[in-house]
Image 1 (cartoon, rainbow, N blue to C red):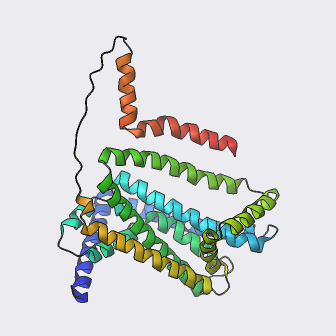
Image 2 (spheres, rainbow, N blue to C red):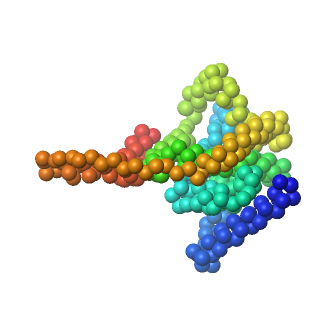
Length: 337
């Protein structure tokens, strides 16, 4: 397929997807709601950017701030990536939006190459990246411009955001394809119930840790960082590469080049895996629907009711998570911190 044909087909599909998104928003919300939502989003973006800058200013007040700052910002960016990834994955599956929307079924039936499919899905990720636009992008800009707003600082933050968003988009598509290939729909629904619960708890814990952090914890943090640097240097270096372009007075530094090369490597690997999965038609795989029934003779009156409740918990983890695990876990975490 020629390059111009690929570009034209990708452009046509992207225009259709953008038009569908705009029409969907206009049909579900009126003009007043759109204005209100836009103002709320603007306030959240400004609040996230200023909050990130204020947090960095507080970090520089601590002892050994120069050493702590680069690791704190690196882990903070990883936390933002985790929030965006899990938010897109869980909300996309629940609401049938973004990368998890059912239009993937339609796109796989079109006579287009895997390259066009990847580009179309990545464009869809860009225009529906609500969590990234509201939290990750303003957070990166707020950190990189904590001293002063410069075009270099803003540009490096935007480039890092696009790199992160591209990787997240590919990962979400691969997860969606692999789950469809290897698991039944009921198993996938139960997984997302448990995954949503785990991601909510893991999102809450760092927030509580930062909220209750004080100067007396600095020696413990330094010891943990030193331990990780010695025993997991290969894992810690990319975190340093993420932070240094945001903190350096010259944003386009060596660390930015290193993190970009690492991003390029993982992008190529994920694109190859995506191409293999699409070529082998994994997303269209249909599982057999065998039902097994057991004849249970209940002599006691409550056996049937108890068995019914047990089967309900096994078949739908939403009830288990929302009614039992989530409230108990949130109370326990609040008490601990």
